[in-house]
Image 1 (tube, rainbow, N blue to C red):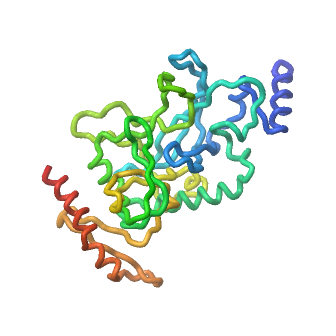
Image 2 (image 1 turned 60 degrees about the vertical axis):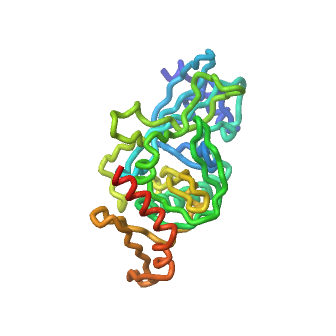
Length: 302
Protein backbone atom coordinates (compact mmCIF):
# COMPACT_ATOMS: atom_id res chain seq x y z
CA UNK A 1 0.00 0.00 0.00
CA UNK A 2 2.83 2.38 0.87
CA UNK A 3 4.41 1.82 -2.54
CA UNK A 4 1.10 2.44 -4.30
CA UNK A 5 0.46 5.75 -2.54
CA UNK A 6 4.11 6.84 -2.28
CA UNK A 7 3.94 9.26 -5.27
CA UNK A 8 0.77 10.86 -3.90
CA UNK A 9 2.26 11.19 -0.42
CA UNK A 10 5.43 12.78 -1.77
CA UNK A 11 3.47 15.27 -3.85
CA UNK A 12 1.24 16.14 -0.89
CA UNK A 13 4.17 16.68 1.48
CA UNK A 14 5.93 18.85 -1.09
CA UNK A 15 2.84 21.03 -1.50
CA UNK A 16 2.27 21.35 2.26
CA UNK A 17 5.88 22.42 2.79
CA UNK A 18 5.18 25.37 0.50
CA UNK A 19 1.79 26.06 2.08
CA UNK A 20 -0.12 25.02 -1.01
CA UNK A 21 -2.70 22.42 -2.02
CA UNK A 22 -4.38 21.19 -5.21
CA UNK A 23 -8.03 20.30 -5.74
CA UNK A 24 -7.44 16.57 -6.05
CA UNK A 25 -5.58 16.51 -2.70
CA UNK A 26 -7.89 18.84 -0.84
CA UNK A 27 -9.45 15.92 1.04
CA UNK A 28 -6.07 15.16 2.67
CA UNK A 29 -5.70 18.68 4.08
CA UNK A 30 -8.44 18.40 6.73
CA UNK A 31 -8.34 16.09 9.74
CA UNK A 32 -11.49 15.12 11.73
CA UNK A 33 -12.08 16.93 15.04
CA UNK A 34 -9.58 19.70 14.26
CA UNK A 35 -10.35 23.45 14.07
CA UNK A 36 -11.01 25.01 10.69
CA UNK A 37 -10.61 28.77 10.23
CA UNK A 38 -13.16 30.71 8.20
CA UNK A 39 -15.18 33.93 8.47
CA UNK A 40 -18.70 34.66 9.64
CA UNK A 41 -21.04 35.12 6.67
CA UNK A 42 -22.87 38.07 8.19
CA UNK A 43 -20.08 39.99 9.98
CA UNK A 44 -17.07 38.88 7.89
CA UNK A 45 -15.20 38.41 11.17
CA UNK A 46 -12.94 35.40 11.94
CA UNK A 47 -14.39 32.25 13.42
CA UNK A 48 -13.50 28.58 13.84
CA UNK A 49 -15.52 25.38 13.55
CA UNK A 50 -14.69 21.72 14.09
CA UNK A 51 -14.17 19.68 10.93
CA UNK A 52 -16.15 16.46 10.65
CA UNK A 53 -16.29 15.03 7.14
CA UNK A 54 -16.32 16.00 3.46
CA UNK A 55 -18.07 15.18 0.22
CA UNK A 56 -17.47 16.31 -3.33
CA UNK A 57 -20.72 17.57 -4.83
CA UNK A 58 -22.06 19.12 -8.03
CA UNK A 59 -24.50 22.03 -8.05
CA UNK A 60 -27.30 22.65 -10.54
CA UNK A 61 -24.92 24.60 -12.75
CA UNK A 62 -22.86 21.38 -13.05
CA UNK A 63 -19.97 22.89 -11.11
CA UNK A 64 -18.08 20.83 -8.57
CA UNK A 65 -17.49 21.98 -5.03
CA UNK A 66 -15.97 20.59 -1.84
CA UNK A 67 -18.57 20.33 0.92
CA UNK A 68 -17.42 20.04 4.54
CA UNK A 69 -19.72 19.05 7.37
CA UNK A 70 -18.54 20.88 10.50
CA UNK A 71 -19.84 21.66 13.97
CA UNK A 72 -19.74 24.51 16.48
CA UNK A 73 -21.26 25.36 19.85
CA UNK A 74 -24.40 27.49 19.77
CA UNK A 75 -27.32 28.51 21.96
CA UNK A 76 -30.86 28.68 20.57
CA UNK A 77 -32.48 30.23 23.62
CA UNK A 78 -33.33 26.87 25.12
CA UNK A 79 -30.42 24.57 24.49
CA UNK A 80 -26.65 24.99 24.50
CA UNK A 81 -24.87 22.41 22.41
CA UNK A 82 -23.49 21.53 19.01
CA UNK A 83 -24.96 22.78 15.75
CA UNK A 84 -24.02 21.86 12.20
CA UNK A 85 -22.61 24.12 9.55
CA UNK A 86 -21.62 23.41 5.96
CA UNK A 87 -18.52 25.04 4.52
CA UNK A 88 -18.07 24.89 0.77
CA UNK A 89 -15.09 25.50 -1.49
CA UNK A 90 -15.58 25.78 -5.27
CA UNK A 91 -13.34 23.75 -7.53
CA UNK A 92 -10.12 25.47 -8.53
CA UNK A 93 -7.24 24.79 -10.89
CA UNK A 94 -3.56 24.41 -10.13
CA UNK A 95 -1.91 24.75 -6.73
CA UNK A 96 -3.49 27.28 -4.40
CA UNK A 97 -2.17 28.77 -1.17
CA UNK A 98 -3.86 27.05 1.75
CA UNK A 99 -4.49 30.27 3.69
CA UNK A 100 -6.25 31.78 0.66
CA UNK A 101 -9.01 29.16 0.77
CA UNK A 102 -12.34 30.31 2.22
CA UNK A 103 -11.89 27.65 4.93
CA UNK A 104 -8.63 26.02 5.98
CA UNK A 105 -7.04 24.31 9.03
CA UNK A 106 -6.29 26.88 11.71
CA UNK A 107 -2.65 25.76 11.95
CA UNK A 108 -2.01 27.27 8.50
CA UNK A 109 -3.04 30.76 9.57
CA UNK A 110 -0.16 33.24 9.50
CA UNK A 111 -1.07 34.47 12.99
CA UNK A 112 -2.47 31.27 14.46
CA UNK A 113 -1.62 32.04 18.11
CA UNK A 114 -3.27 35.48 18.14
CA UNK A 115 -6.33 34.35 16.21
CA UNK A 116 -6.84 31.42 18.57
CA UNK A 117 -6.50 33.70 21.61
CA UNK A 118 -9.02 36.20 20.21
CA UNK A 119 -11.56 33.50 19.30
CA UNK A 120 -11.26 31.78 22.67
CA UNK A 121 -12.05 35.10 24.36
CA UNK A 122 -14.93 35.63 21.93
CA UNK A 123 -16.24 32.19 22.87
CA UNK A 124 -16.05 33.01 26.57
CA UNK A 125 -18.08 36.16 25.97
CA UNK A 126 -20.64 34.21 23.95
CA UNK A 127 -21.16 31.89 26.92
CA UNK A 128 -21.44 34.85 29.32
CA UNK A 129 -24.15 36.30 27.07
CA UNK A 130 -26.38 33.23 27.41
CA UNK A 131 -29.67 34.37 28.90
CA UNK A 132 -31.07 37.94 28.94
CA UNK A 133 -28.57 40.79 29.01
CA UNK A 134 -29.01 44.53 28.73
CA UNK A 135 -25.79 45.75 27.14
CA UNK A 136 -24.21 48.41 24.96
CA UNK A 137 -23.21 47.45 21.45
CA UNK A 138 -20.93 49.47 19.20
CA UNK A 139 -20.18 47.97 15.83
CA UNK A 140 -21.96 46.27 12.98
CA UNK A 141 -24.93 43.95 13.10
CA UNK A 142 -26.99 42.23 10.44
CA UNK A 143 -30.37 40.66 9.86
CA UNK A 144 -31.44 38.32 7.12
CA UNK A 145 -33.60 39.89 4.41
CA UNK A 146 -34.68 37.83 1.41
CA UNK A 147 -31.88 35.36 2.03
CA UNK A 148 -29.12 37.96 2.24
CA UNK A 149 -27.54 39.65 5.30
CA UNK A 150 -28.60 43.29 5.56
CA UNK A 151 -25.91 45.05 7.62
CA UNK A 152 -26.44 48.11 9.79
CA UNK A 153 -24.30 50.01 12.28
CA UNK A 154 -25.19 49.89 15.97
CA UNK A 155 -24.12 52.27 18.71
CA UNK A 156 -26.78 51.93 21.37
CA UNK A 157 -28.06 49.75 24.16
CA UNK A 158 -29.24 46.32 23.10
CA UNK A 159 -31.02 43.40 24.67
CA UNK A 160 -29.29 40.08 24.06
CA UNK A 161 -31.93 37.36 24.40
CA UNK A 162 -31.87 34.40 21.99
CA UNK A 163 -35.02 32.82 23.40
CA UNK A 164 -37.13 35.95 22.96
CA UNK A 165 -35.53 36.63 19.57
CA UNK A 166 -36.83 33.33 18.20
CA UNK A 167 -40.27 33.87 19.72
CA UNK A 168 -40.56 37.26 18.06
CA UNK A 169 -39.00 36.08 14.78
CA UNK A 170 -40.33 32.52 14.32
CA UNK A 171 -39.63 32.51 10.58
CA UNK A 172 -36.07 33.83 10.83
CA UNK A 173 -33.50 31.60 9.17
CA UNK A 174 -29.74 31.45 9.08
CA UNK A 175 -27.92 32.36 5.86
CA UNK A 176 -27.70 29.37 3.57
CA UNK A 177 -25.59 28.29 0.59
CA UNK A 178 -26.91 28.99 -2.88
CA UNK A 179 -25.99 25.53 -4.11
CA UNK A 180 -28.05 25.96 -7.26
CA UNK A 181 -25.88 28.86 -8.38
CA UNK A 182 -28.91 30.84 -9.43
CA UNK A 183 -27.96 34.29 -8.10
CA UNK A 184 -26.34 36.72 -10.52
CA UNK A 185 -22.58 36.51 -10.34
CA UNK A 186 -22.87 33.80 -7.74
CA UNK A 187 -19.83 31.89 -6.53
CA UNK A 188 -19.92 29.35 -3.79
CA UNK A 189 -18.71 30.64 -0.47
CA UNK A 190 -18.46 29.70 3.17
CA UNK A 191 -21.80 30.29 4.83
CA UNK A 192 -24.20 28.92 7.40
CA UNK A 193 -26.52 26.19 6.38
CA UNK A 194 -30.13 26.88 7.27
CA UNK A 195 -31.78 25.11 10.15
CA UNK A 196 -33.58 21.78 9.96
CA UNK A 197 -36.58 21.13 7.69
CA UNK A 198 -39.66 23.28 8.38
CA UNK A 199 -40.99 22.41 11.85
CA UNK A 200 -44.57 21.48 12.64
CA UNK A 201 -47.00 24.37 13.34
CA UNK A 202 -46.43 26.10 16.65
CA UNK A 203 -42.76 25.21 16.88
CA UNK A 204 -40.28 28.01 16.07
CA UNK A 205 -37.70 27.02 13.42
CA UNK A 206 -34.65 27.54 15.61
CA UNK A 207 -31.20 26.28 14.75
CA UNK A 208 -30.75 22.58 15.13
CA UNK A 209 -28.77 22.52 18.38
CA UNK A 210 -28.05 19.18 20.05
CA UNK A 211 -27.55 19.31 23.79
CA UNK A 212 -25.24 16.32 24.35
CA UNK A 213 -25.54 17.25 28.05
CA UNK A 214 -22.83 19.88 27.72
CA UNK A 215 -22.03 21.61 31.01
CA UNK A 216 -20.87 25.23 30.67
CA UNK A 217 -18.46 24.83 33.58
CA UNK A 218 -16.75 21.96 31.80
CA UNK A 219 -15.97 23.83 28.58
CA UNK A 220 -12.30 23.89 27.56
CA UNK A 221 -10.33 26.38 25.46
CA UNK A 222 -10.87 24.13 22.44
CA UNK A 223 -14.63 24.37 23.06
CA UNK A 224 -14.59 28.17 23.43
CA UNK A 225 -12.58 28.33 20.20
CA UNK A 226 -15.51 26.94 18.20
CA UNK A 227 -18.35 28.79 19.93
CA UNK A 228 -20.67 30.86 17.74
CA UNK A 229 -19.13 34.35 17.31
CA UNK A 230 -22.48 36.16 17.15
CA UNK A 231 -25.45 36.75 19.44
CA UNK A 232 -29.12 37.45 18.75
CA UNK A 233 -30.90 40.46 20.18
CA UNK A 234 -32.78 43.73 19.80
CA UNK A 235 -31.26 47.19 19.26
CA UNK A 236 -33.20 49.86 21.18
CA UNK A 237 -31.55 52.64 19.17
CA UNK A 238 -32.44 51.17 15.79
CA UNK A 239 -35.63 49.38 16.87
CA UNK A 240 -34.41 46.34 14.97
CA UNK A 241 -33.82 42.69 15.70
CA UNK A 242 -30.46 41.45 14.50
CA UNK A 243 -27.27 39.47 14.95
CA UNK A 244 -24.11 41.06 16.33
CA UNK A 245 -20.49 40.00 16.75
CA UNK A 246 -19.77 39.15 20.40
CA UNK A 247 -16.75 41.46 20.62
CA UNK A 248 -18.94 44.48 19.84
CA UNK A 249 -21.03 43.90 22.97
CA UNK A 250 -20.06 45.44 26.31
CA UNK A 251 -21.69 43.53 29.18
CA UNK A 252 -22.72 45.49 32.23
CA UNK A 253 -26.09 44.09 33.30
CA UNK A 254 -27.74 40.72 33.38
CA UNK A 255 -31.51 40.48 33.49
CA UNK A 256 -33.34 37.58 35.04
CA UNK A 257 -36.82 37.21 33.60
CA UNK A 258 -39.43 36.03 36.06
CA UNK A 259 -42.07 34.27 33.96
CA UNK A 260 -44.51 33.97 36.87
CA UNK A 261 -44.56 37.67 37.68
CA UNK A 262 -43.84 38.86 34.12
CA UNK A 263 -41.16 41.15 35.46
CA UNK A 264 -37.46 41.74 35.07
CA UNK A 265 -35.09 41.75 38.00
CA UNK A 266 -31.98 43.78 37.14
CA UNK A 267 -28.89 42.57 38.93
CA UNK A 268 -25.34 43.84 38.89
CA UNK A 269 -22.43 43.00 41.12
CA UNK A 270 -19.78 44.95 42.95
CA UNK A 271 -16.13 43.99 42.75
CA UNK A 272 -16.64 41.63 45.71
CA UNK A 273 -19.47 39.84 43.90
CA UNK A 274 -22.37 41.07 46.03
CA UNK A 275 -25.52 42.09 44.09
CA UNK A 276 -26.82 45.62 44.42
CA UNK A 277 -29.05 48.06 42.55
CA UNK A 278 -27.24 50.85 40.69
CA UNK A 279 -28.27 53.87 38.67
CA UNK A 280 -27.98 51.67 35.60
CA UNK A 281 -30.36 49.19 37.19
CA UNK A 282 -32.88 51.91 37.89
CA UNK A 283 -32.60 53.10 34.32
CA UNK A 284 -33.70 49.65 33.17
CA UNK A 285 -37.19 50.50 34.34
CA UNK A 286 -37.33 53.46 31.94
CA UNK A 287 -38.52 53.57 28.34
CA UNK A 288 -36.32 50.77 27.08
CA UNK A 289 -37.47 48.30 29.69
CA UNK A 290 -41.07 49.42 29.26
CA UNK A 291 -40.76 48.57 25.58
CA UNK A 292 -39.15 45.22 26.34
CA UNK A 293 -41.80 44.27 28.87
CA UNK A 294 -44.53 45.37 26.47
CA UNK A 295 -43.11 43.07 23.80
CA UNK A 296 -43.04 40.14 26.22
CA UNK A 297 -46.57 40.88 27.44
CA UNK A 298 -47.86 41.09 23.87
CA UNK A 299 -46.26 37.75 23.10
CA UNK A 300 -47.79 36.20 26.20
CA UNK A 301 -51.27 37.44 25.32
CA UNK A 302 -50.99 36.48 21.65
